Length: 320
Image 1 (spheres, rainbow, N blue to C red):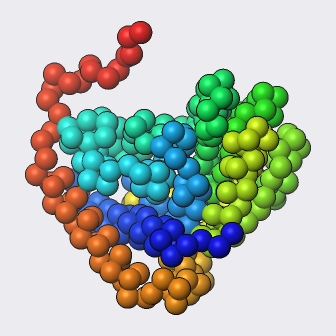
Image 2 (cartoon, rainbow, N blue to C red):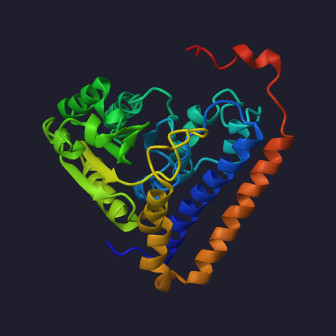
């Protein structure tokens, strides 16, 4: 499908916002002011944006511990995300979730998740709700190659088929589950083919090419909206940083990292493919706007208020 200039610019805006957000956090984390672990999404931007550009606020996504990119792609407020990561009260979860647990139900973001493979079971609950209401909405889960091996993920895929749910399982295969290669940990060596055994149509794609991700996601999401049932996308990609901030990333050499960044950077590939159509200067301006937005978010987060001690027991249980 040919995307309009406006669609392409909006997609690039989201991708560069994710990149600037993550690159800045890589620097900010060295200050020691950010509580908890941080897992960066840099290098995988085309997947989150390619999928979420096909979704509305009424659709839901479930994320992973590496969730900042999914949050931004789904429309979460960047300043409030930064507040949350800094543990401040005005964060999306009042500073209680931090990097690994950002959620925003107003945009359909069910939450980042510290439980490996924890997203798909949440997602099929949202998909069942969507099917029951009959309003044409869908639910999507993002899971890493490591999470793809979890038993609860298999159960979720099977249930999605049995109940014919509008559920899309996106597996972001960056080749390394924490520090273990997918070539070792995935016995079949093929996540998408394994999914077919559950009766789901499955697609293995280049997750660094925005257009490929967008078009594949559009096909399966449109089919799910019309009652066609669940599907799987395995998007192959590269993460530019270690498993978490502080990981020494010794399982790749500096030469390998330089080569991977040069060959698999989704922003560079986007520019090469669409720069002439949308204008390189316009893309440059979006890069600058993203930097300014993130700079502002960091500055405000530094000055924002902490939660009061009295807040410790709020938002723990829901009363019906």
